[in-house]
Length: 408
Figure: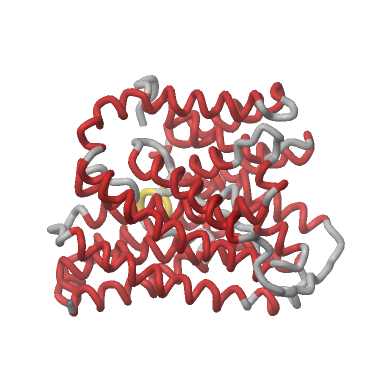
């Protein structure tokens, strides 16, 4: 019990840091914890370290809504939710956007629990068939996203170009070498595609401050339930299927016959994507125990230790989710202070920070990727099409890998 509590509380602290600091991910802490396994085991024990890693992973899925909303900087799991969240912030509803994300994550955690048992006992029986079909599933999803776009030809070209960039990034990821060793390619790739264009637009805009107001959550109970169920279902898919990520789930959630769903229904989309991200993290634990599938850096690090009873990790995840919800609601109030900061000046500082972060963690190769990805990321605004199709950078490499056409 003491290991559970100490590890979980330490994970809450680290997850809060990784969630609030742009560019910092739980995988970063997972690597550090693995490297410092011996001294940490003396403090937390093997079970406590596993609880630390799991709680850090869960808390991150809540708190990363804060920089996504107030600064407009994405990470690998929230690249698409950045756009509607930051849009709400610029209209003065930043606190509502963060609270909606927190609520979606909380619902995603609760809904994931009954699915957890089914995943653990039933899906391992069909794992061979699932592995074989994953590439076709992604191909179908990508096709639907493109066919139902307003401009299918441009959507296809953007999807293809970003996919080629994604394949290049992952195929030659060994060129990425930062200060702390092997570099990270998703940081410059996704920051360039989804973050830098937003910051460049803010730099070119007239200096302004955005007054924030909070008058409640403008979604009905029915909308909350339906969108979080839909998000949890998407999170369940990516929580088990090999090669899928929360970013892929968010792309699937954006699919809508009427076009740009994440802009037409930003509140519902935030609820759904937040539920997907948290459900994905929780259900990844089932995949780890049932078939030894490690869906994230945190789970891979946990697998290096003797795994405790599965209910212990679920308890750690539950405690972390409660803490994370409270902390996210508290940090949602910081939007009032962010509103007093000149957005143009803030964007300049964040842009510089991301360039330095890329240089530190990814080196010269990462900086090159950042430039290339930023060039591609500017295209959607020029063509007037959703940035959603830049998700080809993730979906195409995963599809090719699943079909056995590409090796990383």
